[in-house]
Image 1 (cartoon, rainbow, N blue to C red):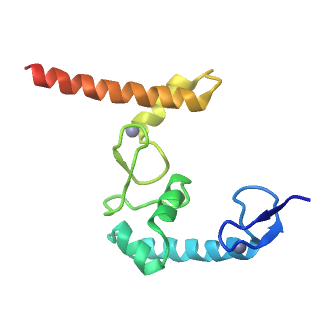
Image 2: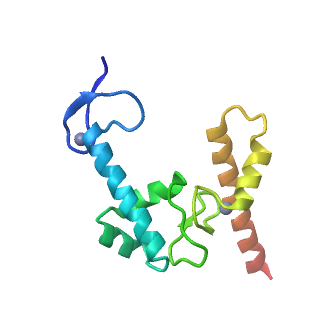
Length: 138
Ligand SMILES: [Zn+2]
Ligand SMILES: [Zn+2]
């Protein structure tokens, strides 16, 4: 039996998989998620701080849900999060369309996806700096 402490309330429970959280906290979290989702749907122009306050959830948690593509912000909504690679504002997930494309392109056959993404990220940062330097020389 795999027994763990719940990350939220500290209670001991039978750990199965995923986030080490007891069933009670998990269902609390699910309730919060539903509330947040509804609030975003009803208030498409609320910003992330507003959502966090109104729904009593942390901004970090909202970000996490967006990264997991569980929450999607409406087009034109005040809320967006940054693409993990290039920093462009996106509505859901981890990467913008362009970066998703780049990743797919670069990761075909890559066997360590994590470091391949890191490399892509480094390349993008380097590219950005190169552009900046070019501008400075003009
Ligand atoms: Zn708990
Ligand atoms: Zn991007």
